[in-house]
Length: 629
Ligand code: ADP
Ligand code: MG
Image 1: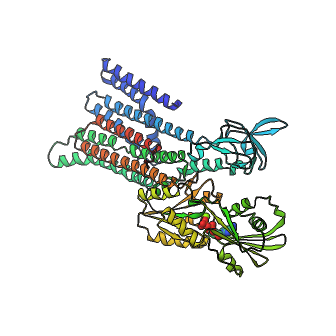
Image 2 (image 1 turned 60 degrees about the horizontal axis):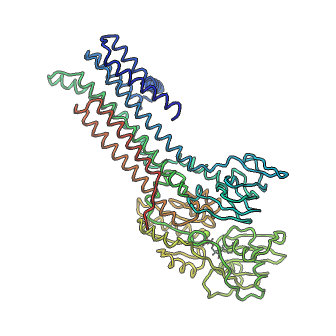
Image 3 (image 1 turned 180 degrees about the vertical axis):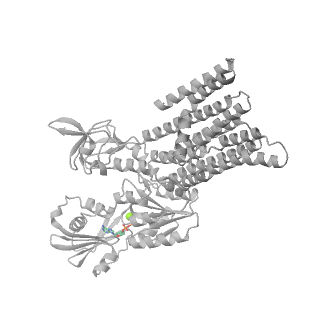
């Protein structure tokens, strides 16, 4: 409990004791009134202050105003009727404050829970100088420095391991609970926890650019993007609060006046009392609090599963996803190609690979990384000049003074080089050296282990269509698509072609249906931005993709997409339940009050009760259990 919450608890207890004591102390008249007013002041002074503030700043219609008006009104009625029943006004204030206390406690607790889940911020980095480790703040470490991570510590910065082996716990980043083994030469991202060995890491990014900082920024800013439901509630409150105030005024004045005109007794006291009760009932706090809390819990629960959602609006859109479009390389397939053959080349295999690897040395495409790996040797960038990457085609460069081109048939056509078709299945990298065709390298990729299951899961959770867009050759694309059970394929697309195909799909979707695109951001960043929901692969994908995307999957597993949809549906379900439940109870109570059936006590019980239930319901969004398959 915070200090503020403790103080409120003390005020609640004092007021309760005072109320009980006053029941047994036989005072009447003015001293009695003063004693009750003192109890009222203890419990309600802050509400009165806020209400006055609201009126002074020209925005009177808030819940503080409603509570102040209703409780002071109850006092006025008690004085007027000389009943001496001052308990009511105080009790209403007391219950209201108990409700507020509960709510601030519950909200604070779930926020702390979520932050604890996201506890990936590293506090320090170890730098070794003359055999001594010194701790420095991660943002003081220059790119290219060597840092040391010991067992039990968080990896503070992104980098490459230069020495050591270890198991890493990546669960805070990816939701994956199995430890991952790493060794010298592997890339490592910040936010993982070292479970076993000592690692020496050469940093490749500054702290602000490292994975942890990006994730934290993302989650912290997520709540600023409002969903339609949240926007609806704030618009609703703007109309609702003044409306109930005027309705109360009508109850208090118009009905007694009407009765007078009709010749009956006006009965002012009854109607003013009803109007005051009406005000107590009308307070919309259950809605105002529980809806943002549900979204916050949903986003927090998703991030615990390794799914980062950048705003409530995307969470809401995910629940309506009906078309899911995939990129192939790096998304459904691993993007790790093996060289399976070299055909029609006047060069020997290793030499051709060397040319290819050198020409590709600056590209971040999975093909380029695979060719460099297949070559295996060290790459001396001094030998390479004039590198040009043509997206969806390949690369051209000058290597040792020879012009080298490596890419697909489109590239060869563009350069006017006569190439030879290949009949093996696989991705074909044609090579041209000094303008002469130099044969082709056949490489093949494997599909990710969960891709097929991921497509099946999407179907099961109500996605109507799955589509694969790829820049790769038709034969490979068709084979992958039929293996995975994707509904439609479009192949041999340039990045602009992917956008065009996406536009067509967007035009086909139903009015309330949403389209999600899943990619790794290499040659598909424009599509990621254009889709209703852009989903990027976080570990493999480029930084640009993570920036352009609305949802980031930390562990690159396509199975996470149906999980993300499941989480969003659960969260939206909770939001709807809360809206419907609080509105029904609210309007029901308002009607009962206007008819004179409930008194102020029942009203405040109903109000606090609904709020508590709605908040407890909202917290459910934090947990998600995937349906068994
Ligand atoms: P995908 O849609 O499957 O992710 P891309 O649009 O990234 O594929 O690339 C499409 C095709 O362009 C590749 O299959 C390859 O033939 C060619 N290509 C793209 N970049 C390169 C590169 N760096 N080196 C060689 N070929 C490339
Ligand atoms: Mg790609």
